[in-house]
Image (cartoon, rainbow, N blue to C red; front, side, top):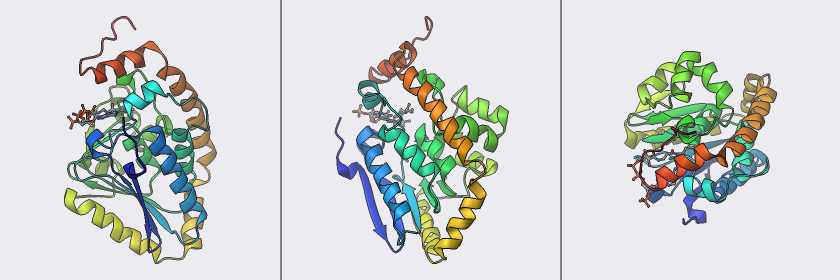
Length: 258
Ligand code: COA
């Protein structure tokens, strides 16, 4: 597994920090080192008064395949200070607008991070999935709270219990995406929106987002911590070991004894 700093590109210009998943050979799956870079960049953007918003983007063909399965198998996050949990808390508490441009597969955290974004622009090839159960795991990123809230309980059960993907148009319908665009236009559109936001007064952006989010934030953080404990335990249990081993060996997992 190679993880280099360039697996996450961090670029700040004209009031916007753009974070690009840039590990295309592994479908932009995210290692602990990449989470650390992301957490550092989001925390820095929150503290820097020159930054008005943050944009997440991947590639036109894939947003992110979620957690790097080999990395999770070998180095499961052990504590609340693990980079993945630090990153999740940073986006949940980020005081300024968070935007995402999503094309192609957005798996696991590739989808759950979007529930913490304020504006989401999807390529018409976007495919959102949260296959935690299929991996012997449970939801993370407060998705067990936020997905039922946004999708309604039964559609959330389809997404979280069955792990079934849904496409860009369905994301638009439930309000997870603001707009569906040709994949070649999604990133540019997100940047244009970021430029609009960057021209607005920061204090008004921050106060408005705070007002929209503050009543639920303590609950979001509590659910995230609860999920994190369960997720960390489940990563070490036989079902996840079988699922991850099967992915690495390109075979179907066998949960018949689990
Ligand atoms: N972790 C580690 N490696 C991953 C990965 C992940 N989450 N997702 C993809 N890769 C790697 C594959 O092992 C493969 O590596 P190799 O070329 O060295 O064999 C490479 O990326 C290409 O993946 P592949 O599955 O061949 O691409 P695809 O276009 O057929 O499918 C996905 C793309 C994203 C649909 C598919 O890779 C996938 O489902 N990945 C797993 C997603 C997942 O379960 N994530 C965990 C969520 S918690």
